[in-house]
Amino acid sequence: MPSLSTLSPEQRSDLRVTLRDEYEALKARGLKLDMTRGKPASDQLDLAAEMLALPGNRDTTAEDGTDARNYGNLQGLPETRALFAPVLGASPDQIVIANNSSLALMHDVLVYALLKGVPGGEKPWGKQEPITILCPVPGYDRHFVLCEGFGIRMIPIPMTGEGPDMDAVETAVADPSVKGIWCVPQYSNPSGETYSGETVRRLASLTTAAPDFRILWDNAYAVHHLTDERPALPNILEACAEAGHADRPIVFASTSKVTLAGAGLAMLASSLANVKWYLAQAGRRSIGPDKLNQLRHVRFLRDAAGIDAHMARHRALIAPKFAAVEEAFAARLDGWDVARWSRPLGGYFVTLDVTDGTAGQVVRLAGEAGIALTPAGATHPYGRDPHDRTLRIAPTFPSLDAVRKAAEAVALCTLLAAVEKADG
Ligand code: PLP
Image 1 (cartoon, rainbow, N blue to C red):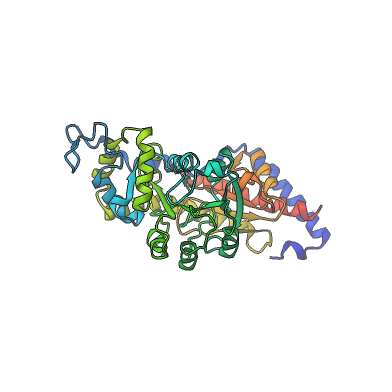
Image 2: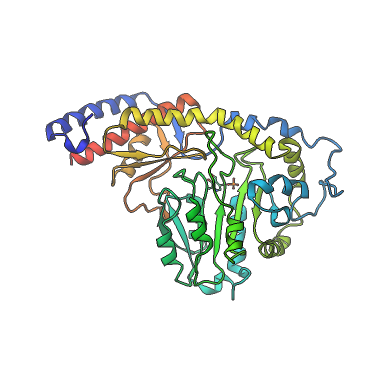
């Protein structure tokens, strides 16, 4: 198949007409498909149906003898912290189990840092304005929205396939206003890449001008594998401790995409000093988390093998959806020099890089044909993708048939937008 750049003007114009016809036919089908958010589908949520009957009547005594129905246990039940210790790569005393959203934990950590400062800092971040957080791109839009909402400046750092460009990070942290970096280290949202050992080592040993620099390690996809491969992501807590920066990382995770996305457990792991700091603030906010949900999770998932087995059931449901996206993109776009896309080994997203300057147009074309995509630019701070190139595809929520149809449509829109751009 020829590449777009080698077509003669006549060939390109013919192709444009053919694709337009196809696109009009697509529109006439009146599809209504939504590929916007990385949500589990109902059949995935059904996998945790039995959990809703737990912990069961009169089964509310935790291992430490406390009654899970009552106030208290701000740090979370010991057995729940033990269950997730291998996921977080931390000992139970370094772990806090909270309520249902890790994003809420990230929000609170930022608020506490802004209002109170963090261990090792001279004053609250909010008293040192403007402060800056490094944002690997493409990245998770809600991280950026948090920063924007609190007036925190963002510096985009390109992802390389092995995590953020560490040369750029090392240069940026020479500025004392740079207080942190967002990281989704495994099956990153949305590129799907996992940080290499070298990236983690360099993050751990960064020389930062700010004494209170934090790595916000959002390991949202720690157990969300799509294949038999297991990434060798080094333990950031250990790496930082070995480099003499034990207080640098704060690890976040949740069971939103393990059990229930609205009623899972969120968790945080860090140094003992950071955990103490966090609990001191959180203790004013609440008298304790929902520990019945914690017991429910322990009774349902049981141990690391139980988590693995449960995640294998998710994989069986969603891996075919990722395969359908790959097939549809390859069928339409392979051989044309108009797009590149990720083939993730885990996580919830596919990144589609379209021809520069056409991402917004692809979203518009898809929208007019009834396929809702995440807005172009959402993968970048302030919603600004300087190349207008990167799209995030979220294949988990729609049915397999809908995913296939939507991916075929997106591929058509991608090629059409590229041809129309080339044709002027
Ligand atoms: N972090 C990342 C990287 C995500 O992709 C998501 C959801 O898509 C979240 C956090 C949200 O997590 P939670 O449901 O625990 O708030």
